[in-house]
Length: 434
Image 1 (cartoon, rainbow, N blue to C red):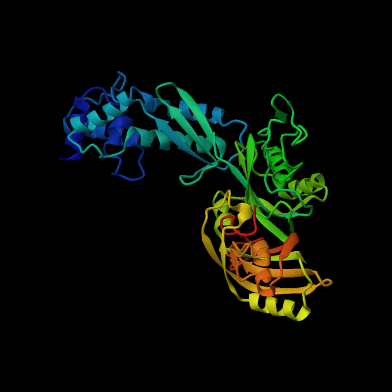
Image 2 (image 1 turned 90 degrees about the horizontal axis):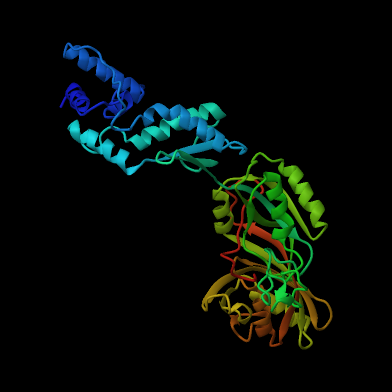
């Protein structure tokens, strides 16, 4: 079937606008808009049939003249996104079932395949999007735009869906008994009230701990971006009673509905460190992208710990050094520790110890440093956890041992595919973690 015969059959179906006519052959004559294609077809048919050129005066039966409102829709979209800072966007269109059916019937009347040319929805998305970009000075992005505009042709409503913004950094935790994320009180479920009265478990605060890394950081980033809420994504987490030292632990803060994206991350970092007042420090704060959340969570990492250890009996220095030598480069089998068995699956984990060193501080005390594979439970590597970890320092010495203080000195990636600061993780939260 020729293009002219297709156009004739479409024109015979009723009053059809240039856009709907041109959409039938949208896969031809690249560089033309659908209304240009449609007008050209209309002129070609009039010339071929020696008829008077007669543009339709009645409403288009296919789109009901929606194609004449692209500019109006773009103006409504521009108004809907007012107040939001964005660089990229995407437009979506909700087409009423009647118009979708009309679009299909036009192809049927023209003798075309139902998938021929371009659908009304696609043309609306493109034409409104093109105008929105011109009006706002922004760029279309079909992967992960800053915001998505939805045009509902049935209700004349425009909805703006704003995608999250992300900030990456590293944190150091310089005080003990500070969790990574906020920890609601279990006795009152975070309400601050117990059976209608003041909760003694949290002193009415609703939280088990006074603060957290999340509470010291997220509100400040949220305020800077003028967002609705925020989520803290850490690369694993250390125990509540452990310090996080060295170069810190990577994290990403996700801000929902941000109205501002191009923030001064140096100023935000300075503000966080000022407000945290020595409890928490952040560094390397910078704007990030959505994929950084998964990168932080999924990149393998090893960790170095420093532990204060107390023994139940006197330990000989030679035996101590020998036990550490056996642990170095050892392959360790660990059943899920008793202390986390209520929230971790019961299984045996196999992890490697890369380095082990230490010194005795008297007959029953020692400082031990362990560099191990991500997911290694280092407290149990010391105590044996009633034989659930093999080998262990306690098992090799034949003396009960307990970790009395734990510091994370380093979170180290095996490779660093990103610009500094690099992104690391803690093996899905396993290991010596909450």
